[in-house]
Length: 243
Length: 314
Image (tube, rainbow over all chains, first blue to last red):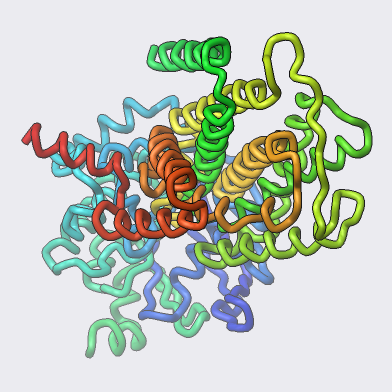
C-alpha cells in the first residue's frame, strides 16, 4: 500500500533566522528521492521538519502510510517514528558509550517495532556482517564507515516504511561512500522502503536516486524528473559536477 | 530472579535495622546512621535524573528543604503524623520537580543546571520571609512520643529512613532495568539520536525530574523531627547539593549501586571527621575526594571495578 510524504509551502527556521522559504516537494511510494544541496541550504532543516524535531512556521506536511493520511504538523518526533518514518541523522548520532547491540536494540523503542525485534535484529546483523562481528564493541570506538552502517541499521530496527537519510557521505572516504550508498539501495529493495536522502555528493546519490530536487538558500530551485535531467541542469553541472 | 533476591535483601536489612534498635543503646549511632541513610536516599534520587539522563541538578537543597518545610507547615497547622509528612513532602517536591522540568527541560545541559541553582536561591528567600514556618530565625519542633516499639524517637527515625532509602533504591533499580531506564540512557548519550529513534524524550525527562524531586522531598520530610530546629540556612545548605552530586560521581552514576557506595563512603568519612576533627571539614573532604575521582576515576568506583574485571578477563 502507498506510503508517501507531501511537503507544501513549508517555512521554517531557528529563532530569527529563516532557513526554508516555501519549500514544496513530495516523495511517492517506493521511490528514492535525493535532495541535493551544499552546506547551509536547508536540507537537514527540511528533514527535521518532517521528523517533527523542528516545527515549521507555515505550510503543511502530510504523511500517507498504508493508505492512511496524517497531518504531521504539531506532532512530536516519537509520534512520527511511531507512524513509520525514521531518520538516519547527519553525522550518525549514535549512542557512543553503549555497545553496537544496545544501539540496535534501542532503535526498536517504537511500540510496534518491539514485536519484530528478533526478526529485525537478525536481518540487520545479516545485512551488516561487520556489525555482527562487533556486537559487544562500544559504538563510539568504531570507524566512521562502520558507524554510518550502524546508524542505518539502527533506523531499520524501528521497522520504518519511509526512511530519511541525512547526508550519509559526511566524513567518509570515497570508497566507503560508495559502499554506504549501495547498501541503502540494497536495503530499500529488501525492505520495500520509500527513501528520501539528502546529499551533496551528486555522483554517488544519482546511482540510486529515481529523481531529485536541488535546494538553494531554502528554496527548491529545480525539480529533476529523472537523474538524467538533473545531470543536465546548469545548477547541478555548475555546483556539483564542476562543469 | 535478581529482583526477588534484592527485595529479600532489602527486607532483611530493614528487619536488621529494627533488631539493632533492640540491642544498641547509644543514640549517636542512630543519629549518624540516619545521616548516612538520608544521603543514600538523596544520592539515589539525584542519580535518577543526573546519572541516568545526564541532567545535572544543583538544586537538591531546594527539593530537600521543600520536603522539610512542608513538614514544618503541617506540624504547625495540624500536628500531622510522620506518614502524612512523608507523603506530603514527596508530593510537594515531586510537583516542584515536574514544574521545573516543564519550565526548563527545553533547555539542554548546563542551562538546566543553572536554572536548578537559581531555584534553591528563590525558595530559600521565600522561606526566610515566611514567618509561619519560622522565617529567618528558625523554628523549634517538638518530637512526638516514640511509641511502644522504640525507646527514643531517633531510633524510630532511623528505621523509617532505612525503609525510605531502601524504597528509593528499589525505584532506581526498577527504572534502570525497564524501558524507562533504557530511554533515559539514550537521552544521556545523545538526545538528538534519542529523538530520531522515537524515544519520547520530553515525557521521560519530566518523569525523571518528578521522581527525582519527589524522592528528595521524601528525604527532607522527617528532617524537622531529626534535627528539631529548622532554619533556612541549614535546610537549604549547599552541602546537600554538593554531596548528592559527589556521592553518585564517586560511586558510579550508571548503576543503582553507585550512589549507595558513594553515600556510605563519603557519609561515613564526614561523620568520622565531624567527631574527630570538626564538621567544618566536611565539604573540604567531599571536594578533595570529588576532584580526585574526576581526575583518576571519572566513572567512579564501579568504573574502576569494571576496568579491573575486564583486565583480568583479558
